[in-house]
Amino acid sequence: MRLQNRGNLNPSFLAEVIRVPPSSIQRIVNIMAALRDPDTGCPWDLKQDFKSIALYALEEAYEVVDAIETGDMDQLRDELGDLLLQVVFHARMAEEAESFTFDDVVNAIADKMERRHPHVFGAKAEVTSEQVKQNWEDMKAQERAAKSDTMAAPPSLLDDVPLALPAMTRAVKLQKRAARIGFDWTEPEPIFDKLEEEVSELREAMALKNADAIEDELGDVLFVVANIARHLKLDPETALRRGNAKFSRRFQQVEQQARAQSTDMSDFSLDDLESFWQRAKAAERKDD
Image 1 (tube, rainbow, N blue to C red):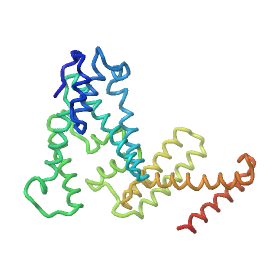
Image 2 (cartoon, rainbow, N blue to C red):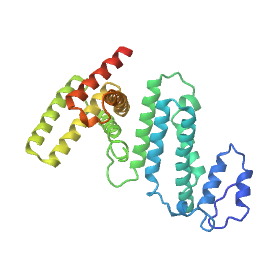
Image 3 (cartoon, helix red, strand yellow):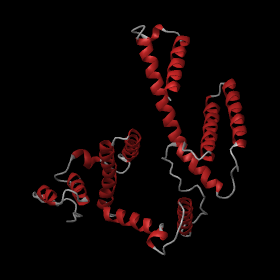
Image 4 (tube, rainbow, N blue to C red):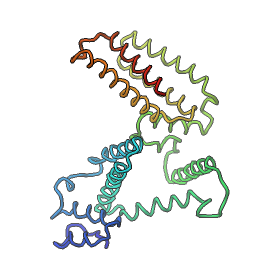
């Protein structure tokens, strides 16, 4: 059952939704259609547009990652559902605008997956994981080139790197694109020299107490750090999340040590708290 017409859902619609097999994707598609019905839908859902719910997609994606990192499969199931809901929601609004449907979204990604896996869906070939990754990037480049033929201005290699990506992730993607034409270091060592240069420029900006320059130079430092991570074949977002988890874990140990001696952490000096930190750090290393 497809429900494409807007504003004419009959009173038995909810019963029709229930008749859809519980495991069918059509069930959530129909539920979203009901929520967006102008006459009988939900006021909050009807009020939304593409921009108003855009950030929810990012939030739900982060929560999926959190569930993966904690290894909680029940949570992962729920968070994947929340992320899927965002896809269904946007597709429903696009269908109302007569732009595309949820089926179009599914068919587009299915076509892309088949197109970019010719070793599976075309002529069978023995390929390594790295070759698959390189072929994927090559095909993406070909698709961008084909799309650029219809554009008035010449395209940039960086054109379709999304602005909404987490900044460190976007930095890595920008660097990878530039590396395709050889604008890259061949090994990590020179990047550390660049990091020292950027840190020096940050210190100079701090000495001048120029807020704009400080922010600009700090951005350069972080960009170089992302480049180091890329050359080490590490994801800076994952590394930073690991650092965040480590800090949280050790700080909680600091809190426990402080509470054992006082009810107010402000009773302790920075030196005291640093001593607690070093104990927590040593205990963690001992456990390892």
